[in-house]
Figure 1 (cartoon, rainbow, N blue to C red):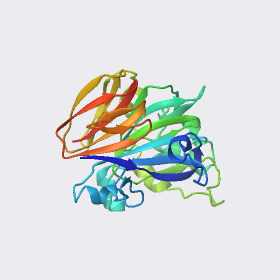
Figure 2 (figure 1 turned 180 degrees about the vertical axis):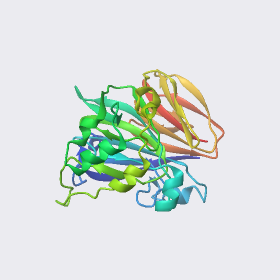
Figure 3 (figure 1 turned 180 degrees about the horizontal axis):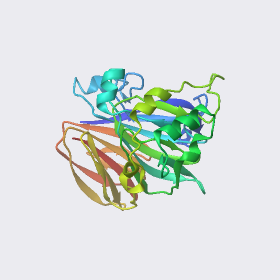
Figure 4 (figure 1 turned 90 degrees about the vertical axis):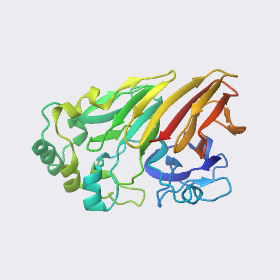
Length: 299
């Protein structure tokens, strides 16, 4: 069964305008559009099937281990970190959050903040937060371009910078601890809540866990595997118009169109649209135009 999805739209203080072209062509969405939750069973951000049934209901009790988002930034995101399963279970009664990013577009000199610079200790970071320093100066800034990929394990301090559009695949969890938010106000005109104590508990300060190679960096603009973990694997498929590819599927899989238009079992999926594939072991993906597709399979 192919279940095309209607995403949950999220207005954020840092959101941009690019996603509105695909998700709000009538211009009815109010505010900057930062995230679209394309494939989600989280209660506070359910994606819907075309019949308006929630994906959670359509899966009939089956557990979805991942969540897929498009993210577009007009300003920097907060510097933040996500806990692992053990910490999240104890403190939030929730799952932790591993995630990964595939860059779809980036303005000149745009980038991400990822990992701490050499010799930044827990004490040094705490001091910077308490004394009102610009915390971003303690993180590595990495210029990004289309096709860049980064895996972000739980415990990794990070922020997406302004001028970046990406697709995120993450563990199905909503737990985020903000470390620093650029001394700005939220959409309600008030400072957004920080979670410094919990963040300091979970940040991985090991030097080896703050190096670029730890984040599985690669630039992939052709077909290939992005990453595989305990929850999902994510792969890019690049097809020329008329090409066909047989997809071996298991569990609950998702097809996300990054460029172009494809058909899967006679269901057309256009650029920036997503579909969940349920109870099908294999399917034929046919490119109507030159296409780039993200295929996510549940482990």
